[in-house]
Length: 343
Ligand code: NDP
Image (tube, rainbow, N blue to C red; front, side, top):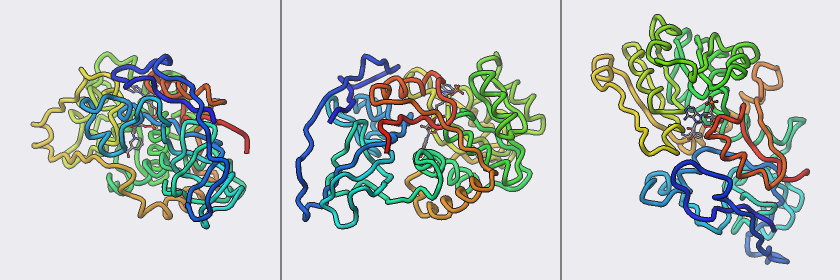
C-alpha cells in the first residue's frame, strides 16, 4: 500500500518537500471477529484544518486536542469515499461503498471499523458529491448557516473564501433562504463565478482592495447582519467594523492565520459591545444530529438544480501534497479532493 505522510512536523507555510510517499503492508486476511475492514480509497477530501494537526503540538494545542496530531511517517486520516475490499466486520461487505475517515493512501486499514463510517448508494449522483456537497463540507455550510447564524429572510450576509468548499455553499443556501449575499474571493475568475453561476448578489476580489473596511462599507451601505468567517485576521476586523447592531459573526475557520503565526485578528471590542455583536465558533462534529435533514434537503436541491456542486478534483495519490498546499494559495475553486482510484 502506497501512502503519503509528513517528513517532520510542519510549522508555517507547507511545501511539497514536507511530504513523502511511503509503503506499508496490509494484512493478507482479516479475522471475522476483529471488526477490522480494508478499503480501497477512491476520493480523499482535502481540508485546511489538517495543517493544524501537522504542527508541533505546542503551536496548535486546541486543534490537535480536537482532531489528534499527525505523526511524521504515519498515515494521515482524512474524510473520503472508499470501497470495501475485505471485511471482518458484520456491518460491511466486500464492494460496499462507504464514506468516513480513510487515509491519504491507496488503501486504508480501518481498525474496528470505528471511523465514522456510513454505507451509501450513489442513487445516480457522482461519488465525489459524498465528499463535498453531501459530506462534511456541505454539513459545515448547512449547520453553520442555519443552526449557528439563525438567519432571517432579507438579512444581509457576507461570506469570505466564498469560492471555497464551505463558502460557496453558505452563499448558495443563504440565497435560497432569501438573504442578500456578498462574497469575497482571491481572483477575478472566482468573483465572476460567484456572481454569474452561483447567484451571489455581489462579490469582490479582496486582493484588489487596499482598505477592506471601506470595501465592505461600499458593498454593505446598510451594514452586515451575518458574517460567515472562513479566513480571520484583517477580514474579520473589517467585517466587525461594518456589522449592524445585533449582528452575528460565525467563526467557521481562520485559514489566513493557520500558516502565519504573526497574523491574529484583533476586532474592535468596543464595536462588539456597543453593537451587541455575537461572535460564535463552531465545529461541524457538533451537528451530526442535523445530518439526515441536511442530506435530504441538499439532495433535493441538487436534483431540482437549485444547488450547484462546485468541485475541484486532482488525480492520483502523488497529487495529494500539492492539492493540499494549494488550499493556502487559493489554487482551488470549490471542494478540493483527490481522486485516488476508479471504482
Ligand atoms: P476552501 O475550499 O475555502 O479552500 C481554502 C480557500 O481559502 C482558498 O481557496 C483561498 O481562496 C482561501 N484562502 C487561503 N488563504 C487565504 C488567506 N490568507 N486569506 C484569505 N483567504 C485565503 O476550504 P474549506 O471550505 O474546506 O474551508 C474553509 C474554512 O472553513 C477554513 O478556515 C476551514 O478550516 C474551515 N472549516 C471549518 C469547519 C468547522 O467545523 N468549523 C469544517 C470545515 C472547514 P481565495 O482564492 O479566495 O483566497
